[in-house]
Amino acid sequence: MGFPSYCKWAALALAATAAAQTTTSCDPMNKTCPADTGLNKYRLNTDFTAGSLGRWNTTAGTVTTTDLGAKFTINEQGDAPTIESEFYIFFGHVDVKMRTANGTGIVSTWILESDDLDEIDWEQISTWDTEAETDYFGKGNTTSYDRGTTVTVSTPEETFHTYSVDWTAERIEWLLDGVVVRTLEYADAVDGTNYPQTPMRIRIGIWAGGDPDNSEGTIEWAGGETDYTEGPFSFYVESVNIINYTPASAYRYTDKTGDYTSIKATNATISTNLGSSNSSSSVASSRTSSSAKASSSLIASSSASASAAASSMSYVSAAPAYYSSIFAMAVGSFVAGLMQF
Image (cartoon, rainbow, N blue to C red; front, side):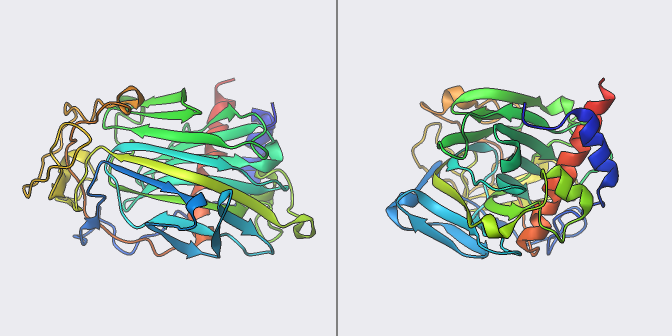
């Protein structure tokens, strides 16, 4: 196993400086925010080898398209190229086919992230070679640290693998090359209060956890200090395939609970298959809706319309701030692992 032992992780956690969470320009838990732009169809497939980023915005650094796909490269200290979807989804399935970067302390990652700081993550630290991490986060809650697991991936720096998330109101599944490697039930996330359940954007990027300017704990967590003279370090994303279980033009929070039942969808698609018939009415959320029960086994056939969606605030943090929340989750997760022994 490439990762250090749980004891080592606990030591790193104690050495680390507490990392700030990603910030937002409008927190729907505290005030009324503008509605989020939704993905108003069930499917969106982006093939980055075709030469365009499509409906993805570059939020940090430079991301280019190549024959291998979207290319995220760290050339020098401070680089952290990142893209994010120009829309939100509300429960869904996302496949990211990618080949991770090499280099000590280099982290290749993709996440789902909401306005009230819900997160679902895949991340690969190149130092640990064949190990990837899965994490989740609920509304910036740092009172529990039992969210992370590790998954074995064969030759991730040489081979494209598909890292997936299937997310419903009842459970989250992380899949690697189509095989479920982790499941989180709603009730297992602090009785649902720490369960990611609000409309999410998708973010993909690369950063140097081993940057010399990072805290000692961060550098050790990433496996050592990054030597930029060994670069450049490049991460490739061939494609992203999305199924949005609640297609809608916008999502609005109707109260400040951050609960999925409070989310309303505008112009929601109500067809029970992957076609696109639209309704101008809002659709009330429900954990018993067929979309909430949708799973990876349904993707090839149909995904019923889910319950509804959310209001918005756009993230204002730079890429390094975004990645700091991932670090906080990873360190805390391994503290919990120690406690199990």
